[in-house]
Length: 388
Image (cartoon, rainbow, N blue to C red; front, top):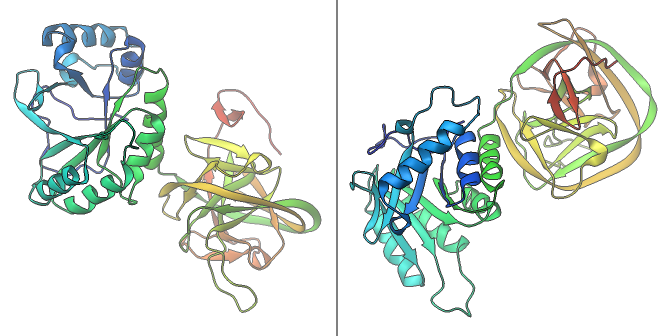
């Protein structure tokens, strides 16, 4: 993934609102700069007092030459966007105006910027610094950011707050659900850019789902199954990817559907026994036994659209189980999942319907995520592995 605008002076397509959020980096640390380049960052912000434009350009070019990232096979300095913060805004290498720089210290500052955002147009860019007018006061950031996002509306302009930590950056990227249009990460800490870039990549994630045909449904046996309760509401068709084999995970539906016997639980996925894998952000898996409050999992729709949700609670109880075996359509490989034997536990069919495990029969089709290869501590690795 490449984060930030491409081009030296005027980024291509500036007049269009990009679906992907921008990640700019401001740093004086060489290892952070190298990390940023290798994570696909394309826009770098420098203070005007940090040296001449030529010095900054030479430093970035040197790091670019030493980068070994496979994602940059033909990248050159012209592919990067070097910006400079001055007293009257943010300018390009040639000195052209690129973005407005706004410092918010008081509620009145936020009101004035909100008015400017309301009158802005597509292509206008606002880099926002949050400060307190008094050393004794806490710096308000979240509520002012919400106000700015609301004021901007659908004008097509962009807000990029300056953030000092990955936690602050991810908060800004999700505040008021839509979040800001990107962030300027100001850091000297190696690893911080990777954390924010990983968050953005997970937000853009899409799972490739395949069809699998049920070959066997075996009722019987007991086990400790885990209900994963999320800090989010799931829509019909959405669920978690779970299964006994890391290569083949079934799309297990949430308990969002109403019934005559129990209220819906649209935040819950009855995900199976503790040995099962569950898909996490960043193409990782974890055992259900490992999940705890605060962990993040990947919520997936029947179309493969994915979003990150936070685990609020994991509830493990002893329950009767059913084993579902299915054959993946393309490879013919047999995969398996254990689930609780109950009418409220469902898997997702190719059309998006939720099918109770109690009514599954051989020949029924279900959705799964299939990925050949092995995993070590939840991370894909290249090695031979047998799961059965």
